Amino acid sequence: MGKQARTTARQQRVARAAARRRAKRTRILAAGGGVVILGLLVAIVITLVNAAGGGSRTDADAPTTLVAPAGATAAGAIPVGDPAAPVKLEVYLDYMCPFCGRFDRANADQLNRLVADGTVRLEIYPLSFLDKTSNGTRYSTRAANAAATVADRAPDKVLAFTQALFAQQPHEGSDGLTNDQIANVAHGAGVPQDVINTFVDRTFEPWIAKLTETAFASGITGTPTVKINGTVFKGDLYTAGPLTDAITAAKGQ
Amino acid sequence: MAELLTRVRGLRHANAWIYGTMLVSASLSLIASFVLSIDAVRLAANPQTTLSCNINSVLSCGTVASSWQASLLGFPNAFLGLVAEPVVITVAVASLGGVRFPRWFMFTAQVVYTIGVIFAYWLFYQSMFHIGALCPWCLLVTVSTTLVFATLTHVNIRDGNLPLPPRMQSALKNAVDADLDAIAVTIWLLALTLAVVSKYGTTLFG
Image 1 (cartoon, each protein chain N blue to C red):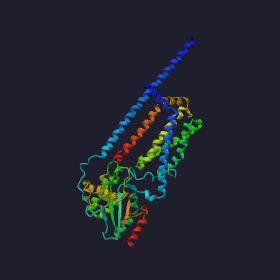
Image 2 (image 1 turned 135 degrees about the vertical axis):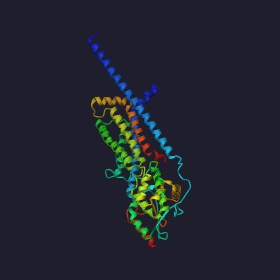
Image 3 (image 1 turned 30 degrees about the vertical axis):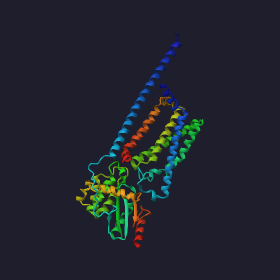
Image 4 (image 1 turned 90 degrees about the horizontal axis):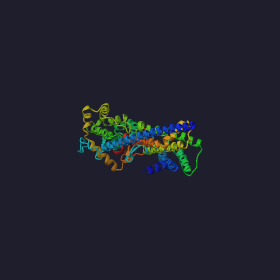
């Protein structure tokens, strides 16, 4: 065999070896990728099964008897202020609804004044349809139950408590406030401790579920919805002024 | 079986499959951009009606659309999709029809679309961790943008359109020939799915 031929043969061997190494590396990468894909698929299935199970979990501790807070209206509202006030202002809200928070922060001062001077009787419908936006912690229901508990046993604090909840409103899609945080908010709003201690009894949760159902059945499509003497207010809910003007106009009629 | 696998792999590297996928993905992206643009215009025209939590809005209260991140450049982000996706669609259709674009053109497309993908993922990150609301149309944009990016990269590596050092080009070409890119994209999309279901699983089923 000549020198030339030997060189060519060696080059071919080297090239074949390199190709084999490359193919091996590729196989290892592909196999590794396959393992990662399998792992991800398993993780996705487990997460989905957990989420589905969490959603339909049977809740052994939940009370089943329907109890309405003292003073609640037949339609399922928590009343605040003088029953004989000339203007009835109904507010449908969900404590998780970011726009309800904006509405409340814009109008709280005016509403406090109008309730205090006997112009407005406020009727609050605390809905729970945004439970699905608090990662399974049902913040809407927990907050609404707390509000109903306050309405039941410390009705003069319910407006302050509602406004305090909105002042510290959690982000939509977060876990919401914990029960302890809700208790702190209530404490800050002046709710007596013995009332706060009964939040965890979840007494009014069936009532909240019922009123949510009733509200949507009656044609409410979202929150916040505000009605002045039974008519939906269509003006600007997010700046102070327009609502007050509409209330003043309604009072004059 | 082995023959079938070879044929499938051959098909995957063929223009029809690559540009077909690009066309479908870009079209989905365009549709999503359309829906989001219309929403944005409606929101601007009448903030009152859209600024509420609707019983029918399954996943969120529209907080995504009204966040500052949704109009980073001073106008709704979806407008960018309206501008960019038709170009991608044109490129895909022309290529399916046999047109071959010059290298500089495909390279520019790669650069611009890479910026687009980065932007799409920044938005995804923002909506997941800062806005905290899920937006199904935005998610469709994220997925289809990923697919357009993957197909564009695939074709540019296959055809050597990118100004890369020869060693890197040949390494990437080998990886694409061995379908490692398909594995990478699958992992990418599955990771995205896992992120979404672990964050929003309870929302989807609650």
